[in-house]
Amino acid sequence: MLRWARAHRVAAVAIALAALALFGLGIYWFGPQRLVLDREVAEALPTPTGATDPSTGEEPLEEPSGVEEVGSGEFQSLEHGTMGLARIVELQDGTRFVRLEDLDTSDGPDLRIYLTDQPLSDDWRIWDDGVYLDLGALKGNVGDSNYRVPENVDLSRFRTVVIWCRRFTVGFGVAPI
Image (cartoon, one colour):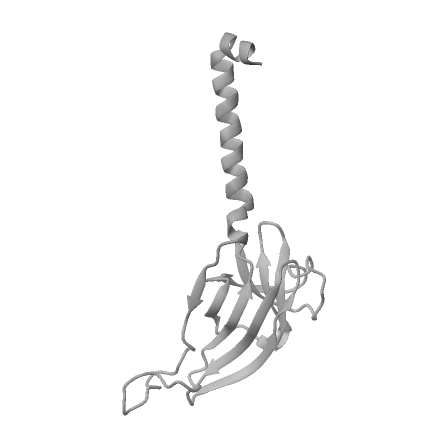
């Protein structure tokens, strides 16, 4: 092998570079480092305009008036262990959010937050079947985060919140709402 590499230096270098490129592509595509590294997020609960404590000028520690919980459910694990609470909250002005609280799941490549019409299930591949709404990229796999629901969306059409990996078409965790 070494004798061949010396005799065919250009080919050996080309093969080594191709192997290195494939290795790098594999790291990018599968993102194995995301299984052991966390992205923490700590977003406050969305509040109506002016929902501050008049004595301190800060957001109140308790849930402010003008924020109504429309639905909620605990996450259940699918392909990856997932814990936390998914809430649908509505502000006085009609703005609605999916709020994830105390979320703890694995990180992964291309994770999204979906609202789906699928009933609660432990099947980790069905969540992009039927009607679903992509609310955007998962902001962090640990902590609290908010995802705005567009105004024209009829929430009665949806039954679950799912942490979905688009790259590998699998659900990480699901919560009934």
